[in-house]
Length: 279
Length: 306
Image (cartoon, rainbow over all chains, first blue to last red; front, side, top):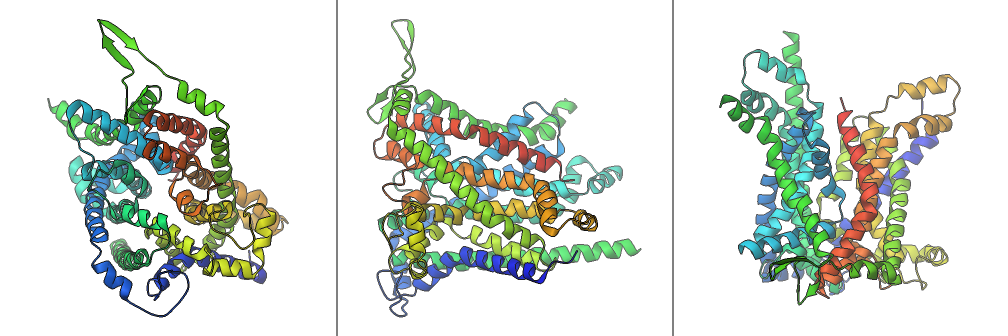
């Protein structure tokens, strides 16, 4: 079936407009971070002063450091828990409470964050009353982010596990590999890409989270998004544009690099498979 | 012993570790919220529902908060408005996202990974910062505001009741819905694309051979086959939008009340934990049906992949 010429142009137009809509705010953030005016939406000339100011901004830098630590721990924890959850859902089709389990894995993806944040906080407060532990701070924020991150990681890893050819694992087992050997030597290398993708995704989800952090943070544990949010609430602020530009640059480099590596691995693997097939 | 060890280190642990984690940190907290929503308020705290005094176990339940929520028209209207804004966002996302995902899935196979990456990339950069950027774009003199006013579209928005005064776009229902559509559009596009890209195009060829126009084939074959994607995408947009807080706080105005903001204010400004809990319980009741639909389709999509 051949698509008509107008159809093709309509499609291209729709995609272009859609991408323009998605990227307009990002372009504006970057452009106005170099704007020589305290009101960052009208161009007054080029400057780097907001970046210089950012380098001295203790509140922002402290928030950034805390957020990076939490994001690192969240990403690592969420990939482990997410892998286990994905495994349980893909490999074991029958166990008690499976419906409840799959519901609990998927629900944090859509559950309004105010509800998750409030309920988690009230539970932690009750626990703290009973045991005197934990204080609100980095640990409690981490638990909240871990919950959200596990759900994201499980979805990403699950879809990869589902696509795996089970014959490869069966073949390994037939050749005498023990279950844990099959996991470490066969399954894990094959889902490695999705583990990297899940790690990066949960890292950014944690680095970006406002609502859960607001509920779960205590005095002295103000994450970067909380600093940005409190400034953004008051109005437009060029220092926010500067920090945004830095985040965008780092994320763009990271994502492009990661997908290039993944694409290269994929090519290598298919070349190897093709070579193996010829013999 | 051997069996016990295998169970403990193998299948058992794989299921139990995430299961227990989610039970303790996801399900159990909801029960606590339910309990606190019916407890008496004390200063910056709440009273225990069950107290033990003079050898008598006392159960004090206070349903006052729920009575208040159902009787106070402000709460009722706020819940209604939240559902309306979420529904509007969902419909707009579907309207923009379906053709978008469709054309992506029908693009040259060599272009598709790049297009997919371009949809994902904004998703990886901070959502908070992108919402903040719309503030700059929509206030007087911003790029988007200038374009909209220059094209005379603000009259259309005024006629539609989305803004209240000509030329003022920020802190209106318009800026709120725009921000939510912008934020949640990738959540609509990605499941739809995943669904449409897998479709067997030979079905369309068969339809064409049998005399169907492309338009008929689209409505009778493509759309029904993408039902799972439509439902997954719509729920991914609708459910979180009902309780959205950051977007109404940054882009909404005084007249765009949303329930996520009310909950936030009850908790952080009024320090009324039982009331905030009651608001949360009612919110969960409102989204429980969409949530069940989402879970059902999510599970089905994951089972039927192979």
